[in-house]
Image (cartoon, rainbow, N blue to C red):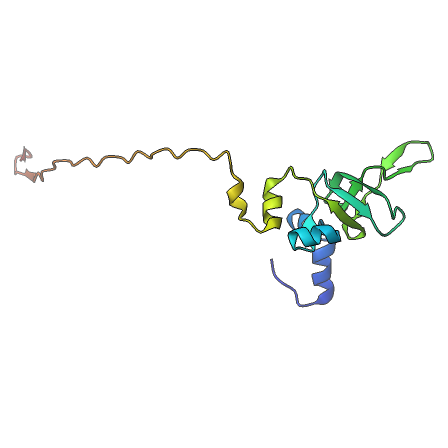
Amino acid sequence: MNQSSHPRKTRNQQIYYATIQRASKQLSGSLSKELRKKYGKRSARIIEGDTAKIVRGEFAGVDGKVTKISIPDRGVNIEGVKKEKLKGDKFDVYVHTTNIILTALSTSDKWRINKLEGKKATATRTDAKPKIEELKPKKIEKDTKKVIKTKTKNGDNEA
């Protein structure tokens, strides 16, 4: 992909026309002061099961678990954050990740916890498969003799 030097185009690529991979990387939230001291980082990727507090917007002050994550909407749904339709049905409201603070992290993702603690992420593999010795194909030496065939005037082949 070509990089543009025009600020407007660059901004639109990052916000509106970002690929799913880039958009999912933008779904990180800032950590609370206690978690910042514990892990030494300011932000972390949000996953389902984290506990978050909304600090800005219509639902400011609401504290709950993250129940859904929507990459296209660039937001997360927190337990207890719903709106009501005119007919009476309730639907989930997605809150942008810049408006929340993570207060507790889910420990279900060991890779993420090790990355936050500064350990190598590959050290978490406990179900590593035992190495199977690879069978190397044996070299087969062929006894090849060069056979020179010559044609005679009669058309017979002689070896």
